Length: 122
Image 1 (cartoon, one colour):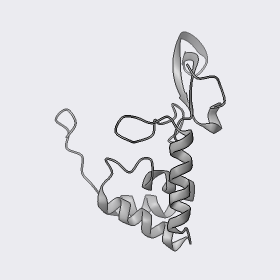
Image 2: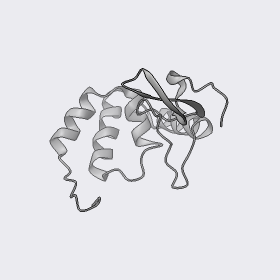
Image 3: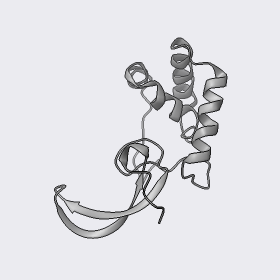
Image 4: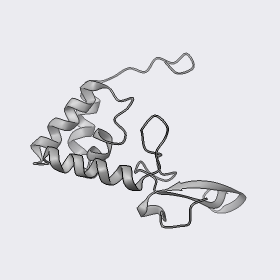
């Protein structure tokens, strides 16, 4: 429960998401985002990866790679990119922008490989 809000787990919505999710996204969720996820959702995701022909060795290799390159939180989960759901690999300064255009103040952003994660760490 978050601040008095009850979060309901809808297995049908999760199943629909799992069917349309990309393989890399599922791999991230069953590895570096595993903590805090519903066991039933993890079962669906692992089943979908099996259906797609992803082996346990490939899952373990993905987990090892992500843990070597991603920024990790103390609980063992990866820090999310500020711009998408991929694991962040770097922190870099940038401008907080209003309406995506007007720079207001500088701040630190978490960045994945796709969103400039090669920038110098802060």
